[in-house]
Length: 232
Image (cartoon, rainbow, N blue to C red; front, side, top):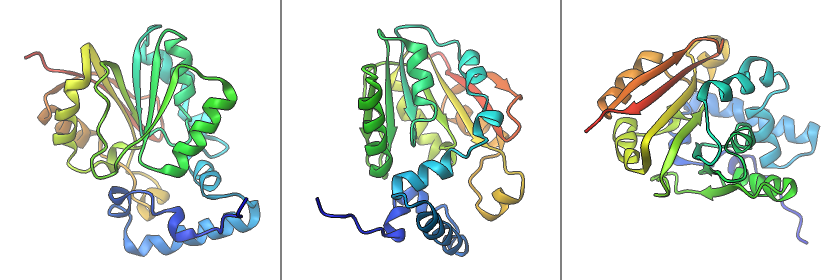
């Protein structure tokens, strides 16, 4: 088997809509972190990204069990995990829908979908399907979703109003969209601005034809909003 050569430029060249939103001045710092992490930890691109997306203390501030409980997912439902990354929420969602339901773990990054596919196979998660989508048009399969869930991905999506207007057609009657995204607060968000204003999310989703159902305030680092399509 040929040994893969570590390439830090390729490691974070995952998606056009991500690169456009990383300020040029910040890219050098990101690459330096990537190279240092690889040297110290001896891991490949997917391992580095997973550590960045899932820091050791994430469970404490992310409160995944409480988030899942708030979503009131029912067994047998179909859920899209949009921007699934390494699967932090994917397997919580899979447990909630049960064996009769299905979670579609969707991402634009082939490193992360490969990592997810390994995790799905190793854990025998028969109710999880991993999908690699085109970053320029990250469309959803038309399978009839009860929930479209996205965590820390909303700010990466171009033309968000038009995008979420299009994906309404993939929702079942009573279907919802849950958006969790970083608040624009703290020193890290000033250096690496990966966040959304709560009011911007609300106004963009309103323009896309959704009404706000729930606005949870218990996540210290993130906004957490749930929307339903406005009736025709």
